[in-house]
Length: 148
Image (cartoon, rainbow, N blue to C red):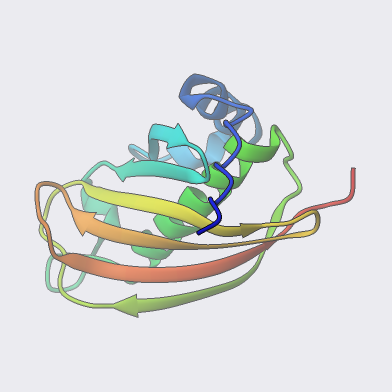
């Protein structure tokens, strides 16, 4: 059976991606804590959204828009880690399945790139409440990568 080539090592580490986000998207931290880059790896990224009341919807649960933003930025971070600081990589599609009510605690998003081409990247994101096994959201997305 032929071996599968290993994913290339990321071009940016966690600190570099975090610094880049702070530089090009400082607004993600306005009004309270924003998403935090927990880790990056080959074709992956893990993000944490700190629990804050600004993310709640009526009924006391974390809102869909908060989870959608977390998934979007998690995919963006996974892509940036692989290709380097490209501010103009943009979302072209996102699809969400909200699976259960998230707990009132931090959310963790695990992003995995399924395909990384020259002009498109496709990935998925699994979101869980901190210290919980069950998924609260599953997302898939596509990003357009600008030409070099």
